Image: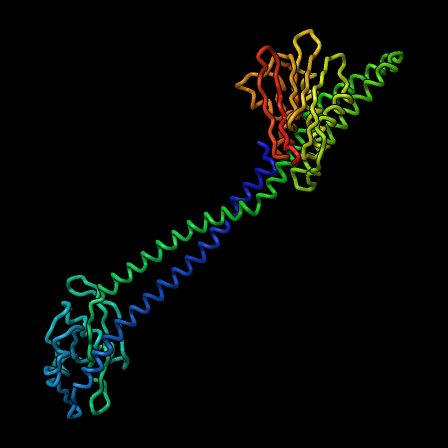
Length: 421
């Protein structure tokens, strides 16, 4: 399946949206990861700060009157003994110091876990902290701070334990908010990227579509005249005696082709914004009379009834539009095997073109203005761009083109233009 340039640009819009969304999503993921990591670190610092405060107070209450003696009796009288976080004074080597546990057990802990952390702190000579599990499965934060005897040796450590579940619940809520916010932000950025990419490529898509329409319209409208011109040339080549008769028809056909090309180019340049409407006061009745006089009728009956009417229009475009209406009526506004009968009336900024053809099917009246549609429901040909250009000229001037059937027979096309003040 062949893709048009406009389709490829629309595909590019999707690619741009994905790239924009992906880049922003990557940035948001990094931001979320850094935010979550920073919050985890701040949570640990809050818990450790609370535990360090406890161990520092307990260390001031631990006495060592002799080089090999540790007294913990002063701790019993301190209010810290009955509050959370709980703590314990433990020996680095079992049996060296009699263990002491605070009076309130906030979370049930295995003494072996506390003793192991105390031994590690004594062996390393520095404060240790980490997460452990209580005997009931709760997550806890533990800190162990070693202390020295009078002889300068590390003999034991104060181990403080804090329930980490509330902090973990707060952190989980924060993670949920960050992840949810990032998902919403990615969705919003995806929509914004799709909208921005659409705005960015919209002029290019419009230009390519206009170019493709121009090429299609040119090929369609020139197909019949080119075929006729070739047929005339071949006939003249085979019949040299008929060249005098065929040459004028060839010239008229070439002129018609030139008019088609000029109309397409004017419309394309105006639609692309290269040119602007040359709006000026114009006597519509005189303009229509000139078109009728210059249009070859080939035996058809064309009558004109006009009242003086001044309009604000681009005379070149309006002249072409009226010419298209008249040409459409001459081609398709006739009964079989009869000559065309066309009546044109001009009054009040309106140009009405009535024919005596088969008329227009009301269900297809709007389609008659589309390019490549026939100008009359009963016709066998195609008006190509004729009626679509007429409607475009009317809309470009702030007017309109209407079509309806006469009571007796035939179609009536009415071009309405803005009247000059």
